[in-house]
Length: 228
Image 1 (cartoon, helix red, strand yellow):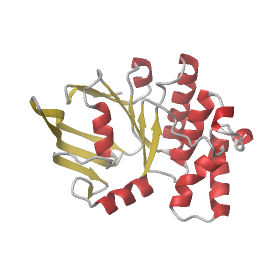
Image 2: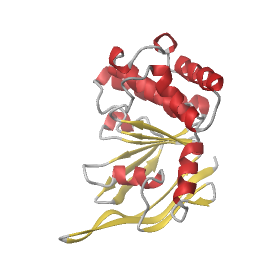
Image 3: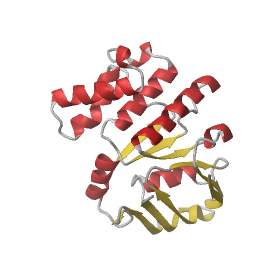
């Protein structure tokens, strides 16, 4: 498989009253196209900071992040925005749906930002809602959907631009165990059938088992890494 993301010795530091704090400290690894990477570790270990750095939402203090030969660590804000628009989907713990918009309107948002026509937005959004099993709920508002259905809408929104990679930050954190399995199986299906690379931060050992590459972090460093 082709390597699409290379991380070389990245660090993220913050100047605090007590001195220099390393949120990330000399982190290196590579991600293959179509991989499902789970990132675990205790609170404060740097998991979410790593995800934010890889998605171009924060800049590392040092080191390199290379996505398909493009150096993200030195890219301009405009280039990073374009990278996210063209290649990245996000799935968050709190779903992040707009409450006064229907399911299909929420899914259409990234397409509207990318300049697609209204007809294209609707057709593409209907297709991904069907993929996640919510074609009959497209005109429902978030409050009219279960937590699991809301997260599936969020996954559909992440998929609608046909991203290269999905960054998922605790995607099952607000769900009960049975709904967690449902969402994880959807992510696994997307990973296998659409060959979308997934990087998922999770506290859950059960959720981490869905990854074929497992990274454990501790105090800003990679504590352990192995491939299934």
